Image 1: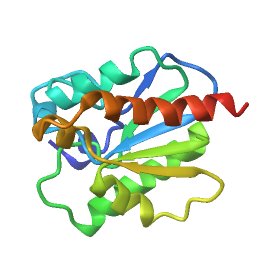
Image 2: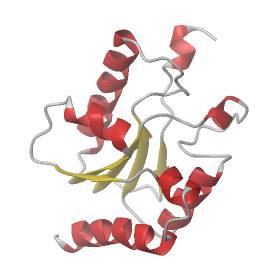
Image 3: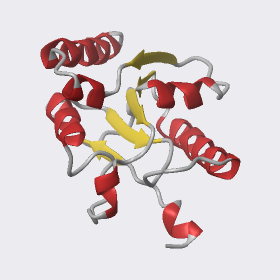
Image 4: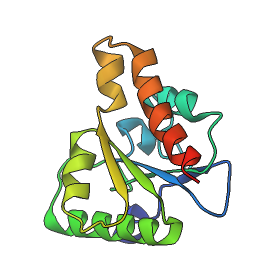
Length: 153
């Protein structure tokens, strides 16, 4: 697969609207993404199912990843392209809130100069699944952020 194919946007908009108040950012699609041909951020694994279950009734949510493909090794060029893509996503969708899923998403979003957007950092959903943490508390945390954002206007 060539560089251009790897850099295609892997984003999914849930319930289209003109303005996406909340942007949820992950690091990259899971390993299973290589076998799945749909252009969905989280698909074909427990993490994706869990995130989609949490967000199924939500509006004005934009899901994206910093990197478009599963990344084994991250070099400077991949980081630059990923941050450039994320910057364009932010400019295009103008979210009021960004929710970073996990420490890697947090690490790269921290490198950006983001102003006038609230940023929340939460555990990666795979941690909740893998270590048997309470899914309901995690779900309520995400939904609380979304609800607070939607109630502000």
